[in-house]
Amino acid sequence: MVSLKQMVCAATALLVMSAVARAEEGFPFGTEMTLEAVPQPGSKRIPNIEIGDNGEVVLELWCKGGKGQFSVAGNTVIFVPGAIQDRSCPPAKAQADDDLVAALAAVETWKRQGDVLTLVGPKTLRFRENGN
Image (cartoon, rainbow, N blue to C red; front, side, top):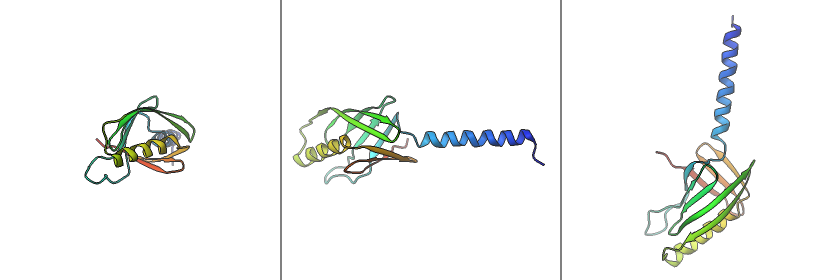
């Protein structure tokens, strides 16, 4: 026979696990993530974003770098690019960087499954959380 104490403990454990699962599926503030993409020819570099606790973003693109800001409400997301540094990039990489910033600025919704953040807009972007 199951005691009341065991039932309360089991219910509490379920609530805690549920809360942890929801937290893992939330927007990944305070996380560094890498774009799911192959490197460009002649480079090992893949764009990544560092998302601060308040949505501030540091971008390291194919060649350029910069800052921006995510604003999140429910599953809606807005990305506002900030200043982007031109680092004397070759034209193809500069264009790829500009295209990626434009795609980020056009995202409308997001979803997260485990360590993957999917940003959905005219172009879908998938970022994977960096492991330690």
